[in-house]
Length: 576
Image (cartoon, rainbow, N blue to C red; front, side, top):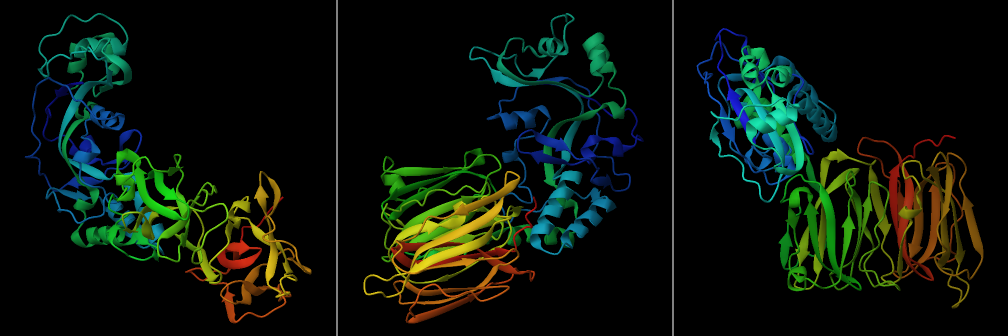
């Protein structure tokens, strides 16, 4: 509820640049509009005919849907749903509004050009976010300045507010706190079960507190004592740029923020788009599942936006589900996917930037039959949504959609040997106490001597070291498979990293596995040679930096059935 006291300009020759509506705002997700630190526009020439004086006092009641909208209201702004989409809002074409009487200040134009000159899109987006935080995201073009009294809160059930309209009669004020005085003027005494804020905008609050309402009204005489109290219409700050600069900014956000990983599975039947809800933070992911089958999926975003479920979850709302919940500041950075040989998505696992791994959803205790694991990663960016395809009883395809405006982790890359279909899944990522500093220090395995002594790789174990809690953490994986033959141990020296993998398999088990480091070629694990050789060398990052073997994911049934090799940049140096 607010008491608006608009005022006219006492002198048209006053310096218009001091008026707050010439400064943009950016929008905090918790507190709403925040006035930018630098004015973004100037008025061309002496065009002041659209600035007119009024002299009235008005009482308005506004009922926001949520607390964030209440923060917008108390500052005179409409809710976000009634404002134009921001540059990193929903990335769809929109109408252009170019106020003819405004032009950007030169320092803003130079800052935008400098941001667009950064060496990659992620840095360009981050630099533009800093620009918008400094100069604002939106500029009011139809606004009222003056002074106002505002109170926001959750109303009592029995409360009836005074009628909105002209506020000409009020009971005589009694002295009290500033909150008491505002409540007396607005008729809101004891109206709230929870009060958010009482605010005096414009004029001198000391005068209101010590001398009363009428002297406070008289204190609003100079432009410098006025403030923006109501915004009727606003435009994106990009709308005041020339067409060439505006198109460069819009193209960056529309074409570069969102990117999609390769798909896993088959595009059978119906599809769904994980980017349809724009740039929003994920709160949780709901999975409908059974043994060796992911049946449906739903993504819940901040603000109550929900995508999915698409078929099975709609017709079977009480069937088995599980939830991946994300706390504030948590994002999904990697997704592991297993596809069943018959086509559906059999298993899925999510990795957070907090280093937590979800369970492998859909995996029975004794494993399942599937194609090799696939790692969907955003190259250090956060998950925006999940696209894919579905039938009436399962998901048949998964494709991750990533947002490059959130940078969380260093580059990843994967290559894999495609071997056996069966076995129990393992993922070594959970054994990395700190992925940024983690390195492989030891690998050991046996060559199978029983069952005819075929020499396949079994009893496989990897040791990782990283910094954790200020000290060195050493983690050993469980043995994958029994010890049935001669054991070989490979120990890496300080500064030694795996840069290549060689071996062979027979489309069922890995027969031979050999690691090459930056210092030497180690003896191979396994004593036989499979029918299908494989050879992987460490890739490089997009900007040419070296990568090394980071960790492994695979399947085993006594012997190793399959391995996926995850590569990453060189680990950060570990210090005591």
